[in-house]
Length: 216
Image (cartoon, rainbow, N blue to C red; front, side, top):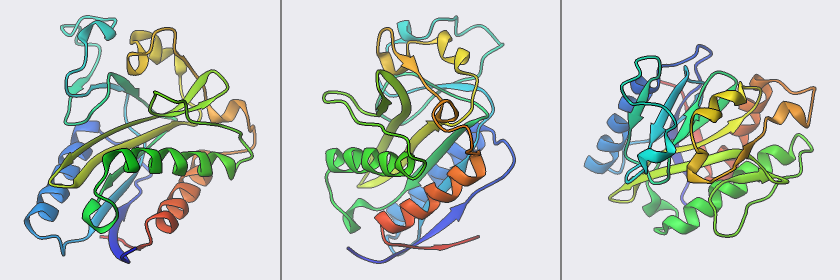
């Protein structure tokens, strides 16, 4: 595997989804223009919002789009509707799959493997499910994945529920899965905190993709 330089951003403040989405697109465009540019990783939290992937079924959104109380974004990724909020750790990966494996199924399974390894570091037993994308603890979903890809340059990534208000998922059919129950990591390991999870996420991605991280 090629050793790659990647810019990493890990803000401590709660970030606006739209600002970070625009930032991802900038790095994606830069890599499409010149693949010698660095990959980009973002690890942080968002203010409460809902995002819809390409071709999402709007019936999975259980409130009106005209309701100004909710921030909703239609974005360039696969998958159905999901929710972001404080207490949930979101990781975005803008990377050139030509340096790894030009196979989106491989990439999705790789992300699942990364999430399983992250939770395993906290002694939380979890698993993927055949026919679905994401990671579960028993019958509850702990992590969601949604990716976009243009000319083999990825965008978006995954979210892990650490200690968030799971009631926010009641406003949607999460990932289009009927009767989908959601979980928090804190329910299975009372001693963890989001900063420690962030550290493990960074370490795992660095090792799995053989990245040299730089700040900018």
